[in-house]
Length: 256
Image (cartoon, rainbow, N blue to C red; front, side):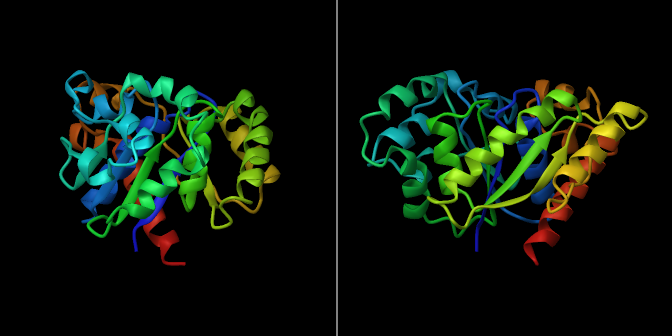
């Protein structure tokens, strides 16, 4: 059965896009077929994975707003073998206003996923916008598993309460939603602050596991500039190794 996982945090700068890209690549390395869905109007994932957003005929914007368009019509191959993408487009920024008058506006993504034949994919990974809006609500209603990328910084911990309040409310619409855990990103392993923040996170949320940490590195940005994943760009780097560990962790978590 296809697993639906979102990398979600309303705070910006937590490496949601980088993590979606590189976890998809790590799972593909393990022989899995992955569909990524870019639901950020900035379209960073789409561009990082080799899509020319200026030349798109269809994007996730059309998918959400046109009942006659399905995932198969929008999905495109990427520069990474085994990974496809439903690309985003800056037009998605207007979708929130356009969805206001749509019946069941919070379930549009859920309806499209339910209608799609996803049997060719082992995973659907969703990149989320840095906001809590109707697009975010669509994501939380549609998915089954949630991974929260988080930078070990005091400000990151401060915004978590609102995020979990939102998740609690959404659970009435999506009782199958499960928070898999926190994905620490941009971790400076010699930093006392980072260590303290991760300890605080574990103390405050003892029921949620910490996934393997992603070290602070410029390799992610460099690989994005090359329109590929860090696993292809610097396969022996510590960042690539960390994302492989995250992929392995998710596979094992799915066996529980």
